[in-house]
Image 1 (cartoon, rainbow, N blue to C red):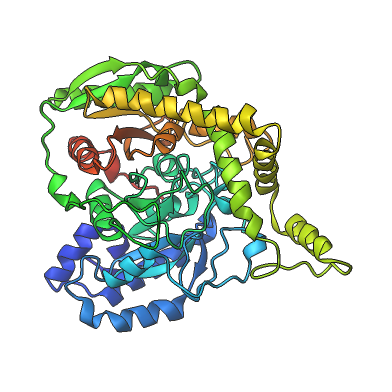
Image 2 (spheres, rainbow, N blue to C red):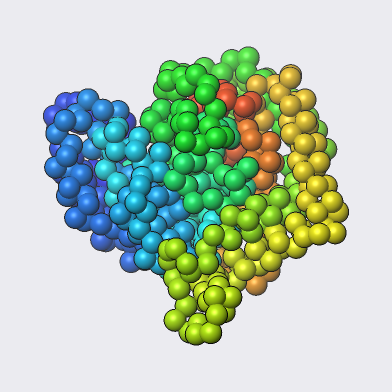
Length: 485
């Protein structure tokens, strides 16, 4: 193999070459850098690529040859803090902000020998399902440059799909790892809430956010979760639970696995081709020995409404710290008072979607509306969690579409926020309940657009997700397709 083609390989394939002394990290990283140079002008997946930092990381690798991600190139979503590297959440209000510390997941990647290539584009502050609200401009889908890659982790998903990075880190608040993974034809895992430390993740909605892997196949997702998962005392929501070796779950055998199919996920509004491929995927799982049963999740219809009260409420609180005083943008137009500086800085720094969510969140938390909206949404959240718990008493996992449609055209839903919010209708319940879920490629439409299968699991039972996803992947060819850029 010509070393310029190393970018086509998965993490486990690169690791095999390292073990056999058939490649060096310098060759692999150079292959990825050439690939980024060749295609990212079309995609806009990267917002920051620090070659000096990459060179330093390669020099520091010598003592890490036995580490689990030795010499593996990783792209990082731009809301995860990397020490002394600009971290902006794709928002003008944080331009120039360089964190003085690494996020917990970055510490673990460095310790594991990974090479941090740079920062990936995203929806501003993770507010979006299309990667169009970024101050850096939209990211494009590698399968069709006129379409969105999904969001908010669209840059990480597009980069992994287009072979610009071997592994990617995203964050998932309402589907922001799984939905772009589905629309870009790669694997995306949202771990159980508390499984991966949120220390150093710039918060959107603190009771919903979770960092997770975006990868080329299921094995790579297991390898990455092995590194980033585990307890961290600096995150008060991090759970001190045993962390298994997830690669041991990668066995091509799901005989007797009980798989639930919720009838509420196959209603009007779902794209016909998406429905067709999900149906075929369910048949494949059945043919592999899984026991399929139909179930009901009766509060599914209320998930989007509850989410768009809870998430903006938490966002309005979290974004209050961005005021032009300590870091990021400070308006030069403000002359008269501190209050004017606050107002002008936020007016200039936040994009329209960020402003919309801050206003909405502040409204539902305000006096007289807290009980009518926020408290009621929390009660609905509990009902959704109870629905899922009831199903998991009888079944090992639940399968659904990841997204109701394939990737839509850039600009198609930008002026219609309600239509955009409905893009996450199948992913939001997972975050409200705090459970894990994975999206794997399961088909392509006649227009050549990827379709994703979502598998939901019990809390802290990522092993069952990996087992089901790996068996499906090993008995299909969808994950092997790559876009031709």
